[in-house]
Length: 140
Image 1 (tube, rainbow, N blue to C red):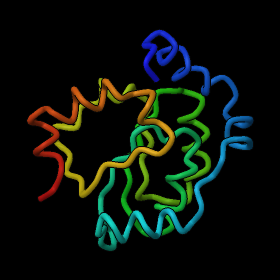
Image 2: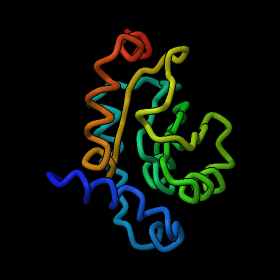
Image 3: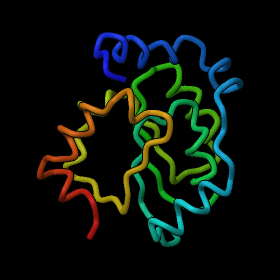
């Protein structure tokens, strides 16, 4: 998405009706998550950070696979919806903050994932992931 103004507006509109968003947003097939885990070589119990979790559509299949997930979500309503959906998974934490403002300096992760969000937060990814704190946060 090349238009920064449109990107800024679009990244907040999804928060208007999380139930509608969850019902109408295409859900990735389970095989995609199997491929992700295999390709990234995530071991059981890996710690992941998910950027732009929305209603938790991608968080849920990863939580079912036993991963510890910190999910960052810009939208307050979307974050609340995701918390409710994932309440049965104690290793999942939903944080309601813009990704570019989240402080990960004390955290350690085995991987970073973004499903359906990268194109809305591209500038945040580039600037934040290039910082020293993120190099430290990603486990070696």
